[in-house]
Image 1 (cartoon, rainbow, N blue to C red):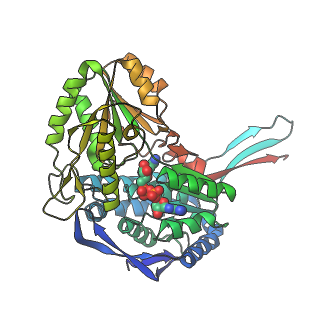
Image 2: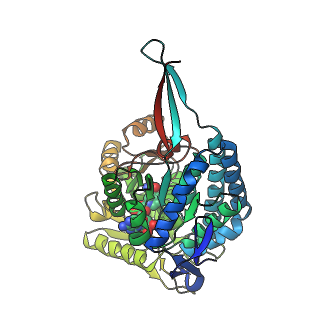
Length: 477
Ligand code: NAD
């Protein structure tokens, strides 16, 4: 069954397959999964287009019940699904189970949102006329996702799309078909009508491209790298499609002179290295006040030397492997570049040979860096962070905002004055005070500014901006 895509309510065998192996142990094969061709994609889009009229007219309660059943099953099977996630992506088992539960909660949240879609009624500026604002589903939505949150990101796109009456063609990242297949199987058994939700696993250049180019897909929600996202954005714009892009980050975490250092070290370790640093919201730039720089670095190094890097499935592991050999090569190339740029490694940065053959990397902390270095300007997307020493808070804010990205930012401080100043001046879409830059709630908006995001926000009730079209109606009764 794994080698099949769900198209028009049928599990359809593909002509090709990819082998999904674990980055913790390359001999651990998670499964052989279908790799769709353009005809499969066309069939999926056709099915979604045909299913749209009836699905868009179902009652909110009907859609809500399906999403709620799916959410309940995901939560009930959290250990088993979390294990597949940890095996295929490499985050630790507790992190993977946490992400699974979050995905279940997202489905349940949007089960509620299906019931809360509202419009507005106003009096016209002209006498005797009423004005109504109605929200309607867009139609067929293409959903294209990255590998680093294999169940949560698909969930936070699929659930609102379906809740608001759209039909879906879903293309997960090639590295993580396992979670995508499980979500699809759960939705199919939760009672989703044929064609409303379609899974097409396969290559971005084939499947993703066909989704973007199809005239029958009304809107594309994409999360992934800046380069791919921009290409997709242009492709959508050329065809008059709505598009939403969630892209990279180079997120700053300011450690102010008055920070509680226990809090600061915990927040930095979590934000920089948990989930192997492979989070778009990871704290990759630690902007540290000169007065506490040395003691902060010393305590970071002590904390990093206690981090256990190993197979994601082992108990007590803090940091799993890097997700793939190509991502490991990219991380190592940036570590090499950092050294060449004059930065010094205070800790880590070496590949690790462990009991199993996997892509293990000792978390790395660069010091003596400045904000012009490429390691501080480009997204590395691994367990690599830099310390940037600053004179004072003013310089810290300037450095924090001096980036082409604007996804998340953070500050560790005990001062209400700095908190309230930074939350206003930060140019990021999400600002964290004494909490890690990574790790967000599912019932409030998620997204960034500048090169990090394009289009409407995701998650929470604001997700409706993307997944519905606003219609203005004038009535003379
Ligand atoms: P990626 O851009 O390589 O791939 C993302 C998806 O796009 C995959 O499903 C891929 O198959 C598909 N794709 C690739 N080429 C395509 C094409 N030509 N047409 C259509 N689809 C295509 O990203 P990735 O390596 O999977 O993920 C890592 C990136 O994702 C990082 O840059 C990270 O910052 C970003 N990310 C952003 C957020 C956010 O919300 N801002 C969240 C997680 C990850």
